[in-house]
Length: 416
Ligand SMILES: Cc1cc2nc3c(=O)[nH]c(=O)nc-3n(C[C@H](O)[C@H](O)[C@H](O)COP(=O)(O)OP(=O)(O)OC[C@H]3O[C@@H](n4cnc5c(N)ncnc54)[C@H](O)[C@@H]3O)c2cc1C
Image (cartoon, rainbow, N blue to C red; front, side, top):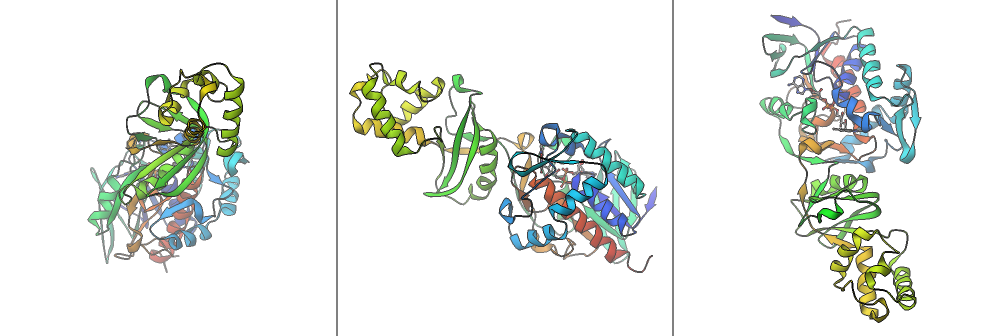
């Protein structure tokens, strides 16, 4: 069976839905194809089910990673945070500002965001077909042909918004890269980001699940790459928690380039090293107990063994006989337990993808392919990613909107 339309959008995630809305608002007939039985499955999983849909600081390029930041700039300017907020309010999603500039829907339910978007698609007359997995895309001078099992769709333009490789059970399992490759597009090697990091040797069982406030610093070839503060968690495989999710974004970029990479865990972020040394010196003078017992007043007991191993000091030693050199070593260990990252957890644990369709072959003003102007890309499938905190959805909305509007304007010119 053959279906004719103007714009075919492949993938009803955040970016594809927004592209369909943008194209339909320009007056195009739009067919949105989704392999799952429902649209926006990943949206429903975002923000722990609450959907951190954008961030106050979402226009700041510092939160994005890409081969070409200028590319990202233009896209964000075309549909900045202010317009994202306006758009969501217009469809009934009331924005609520929380810590770190994060916006969530006031109702606290991610599923409401998907429902509101689905209503908007219906009001614009977008045809949404669920349970349709696209297997092939062809584009020539006559238009585009999109083949799914048992069905072929013809259109004037196609948006490929099939997502990256993160959380493959939501439908974005990397198959979109195959569709792009078949059209001649190069793919920057995808890597999982916003994900837990594995460390050499991991940590002992007794630490598994322990959560402490810490500064986590990523260091490559002797240079500090990024420091993040927050809840650090220890596991037998390595480390997790918000600061680790943040630094995993940079790690994806430097992992294959840097010769020596460390993570430094500062588990007493409240006090600087010199003060800590003074504090330990005073404590050692007044305490008649062991070093271990003295440290129990400073850090979580479960961490003492790790710190003393790192400092090279015996725990049963009486605190009173500690040498100044040993106090220095303990202070230094407390401010920077050095662990060696060996990789990250896999795609099923990742929240986003580094890498994807190379930006060199995509026009930043329209997000149309430089190889064939009837094809366009948006969202996570492109080699652009954002920090944890609402930036990936910001990218998805902004790139989706620009892509849908510009493709519809280009291929439907003269139709209205
Ligand atoms: C657990 C989790 C929590 C997250 N939380 C946040 C958050 O709070 N804030 C934030 O900003 N970001 C968050 N993210 C990241 C954010 O959700 C994504 O970056 C964003 O949703 C990507 O949108 P997308 O449209 O590009 O891709 P996706 O949402 O992955 O959508 C792609 C769609 O294409 C469909 N598809 C794929 N291949 C085909 C095909 N061949 N045919 C038809 N359909 C196909 C898929 O089924 C999918 O529905 C989170 C991610 C995860 C996994």
